[in-house]
Image 1 (spheres, rainbow, N blue to C red):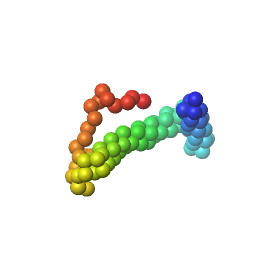
Image 2: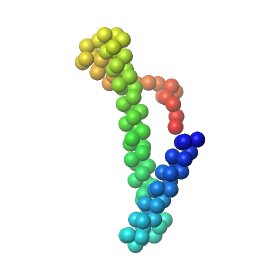
Image 3: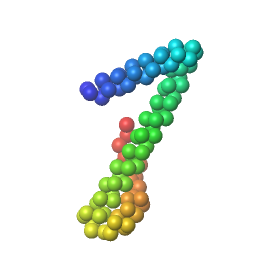
Image 4: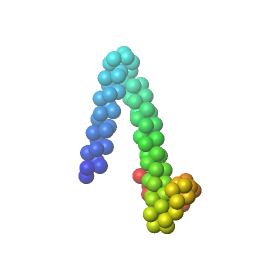
Length: 92
């Protein structure tokens, strides 16, 4: 239930930002909503993409270092080389 309230708060915050931006720049509200929504999608998509790379990378690196007792350089290489199969990834 918290996810729903968080999403609603994000939407309302972005709508408020778009409205204030349209008043300040004296442009149509619809145009500012499109621009704010596009910029927000770029930032949210980049953050999700970064996290979806970083989590498996750090997990595989830690597993190679702590469980397999590889050297630091070898475990970093294992983290870079690891790519999970797309069917095993969770979808948002």
